[in-house]
Amino acid sequence: MSMNILVRFPLPPVIISGRNRITIPRAKSIESSPLMDQPKKVIVCGGGVIGVCTAYFMAAKGAAVTLIEMSDVACAASGKAGGFLAYNWCDGGPLEELARVSFNLHRSLSEELDGARSYGYRALTTLSLTVKESEGSTASRFLPSWIDGPARSPKTIGTPETTAQVHPQLFTRTLIDRAVEKYGVKVEIAKLERVEVEEGRVGSVVVEGGRVLDADAVVLAMGPWSSKLTLLSSVFRVYGLKAHSIVLDPRDGSSITPHALFLSYYSSERGGALDPEIYPRPTGEVYVCGMSKEEEVPDDPAEIKGNPESIAMLKRVAKSVSSHLGEGEAVVKAEQACFLPCTDDGMPVIGEVPGVKGCYVATGHNCWGILNAPATGAALAELLHGHSTIVDLKRFSPSRFLLPTNLQTLRLCLD
Image (cartoon, rainbow, N blue to C red):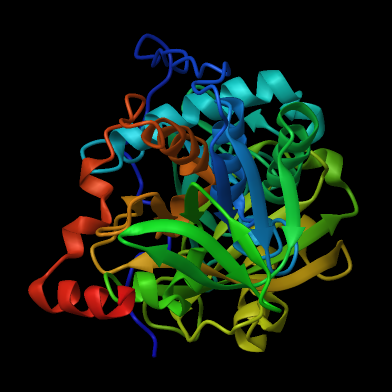
């Protein structure tokens, strides 16, 4: 069923550079010294960007972390997303603090991990454009030369001070490699079967084949697959928003400047506007995404395939915006889709599962998962020891969904 829900990033007011330059504070320091004599054994379930960031920051604080993933690290949305980062686009809403802290953590991590070289971290300018297929192409002195299609009404909505990007798959895999090498995180490819709870406290997880992994704490960072776990689905709903994307390799990649594009796109055959997005990458590749709708999430990420009509529309968008991105001028390197994890109130779920001590959840980040992963992981690493100071997690707690009927279902699940 197609739903008219959040399928693109919320746009901020127009940002004017110059004397109104925004000064972004440095990220809060994350101490890496152990906080306990005996390291807590933590099982992180989920090898996407949220799970990897959580494993990294928990291990940096001294926990003995094992990350389990059923397929491969960054095999789903964390490997197929755009990797767009924004400092202040969530201002005025519940995500403001989380987004600002996480944007700064991305910058700090890039300095630590040589992000520019390792995973394509860079600041960039972000533009909004209106594109109508029915109008002819015209050159504009206000646009980079590679944008030579019928683009109108350009506005700067992000500057290099407030918007940036990463290659999300490379970021996630670079971070887990560092977590393994520096902090001893273990990675196991295994499918989670269930979480064992005894007397209201988590004790272990059971993976496919019946193997038991003991744990002092468990973090469930399973994205849209959170809905497959009764322990979570009895408390709140997470559904999948299927988003499509293509990756192009232009023949003349050197002409593509670092400008992210947010489009209001009017095709000659559709009544309303589409909202595709275009992100050039430092490698010379160009990522194009959009065409989202709610669909059932398959059990295996490998089963996710793009809908042909959605992929065809993204190719059409790319060709309309730039002759450099059309057939014959660019090779299509990937046609893909992924599922964004969404909640009914539009906010992520981050915190301890009600009634289960030591069991934490982090999911429902929607289109802001890559941006908000570092702050989510850092906050959970603090929460593991009692309280998060880097971000106030109260508004994201799963307990906000607790109604009498949900509470009764949860109790039955735990019995």
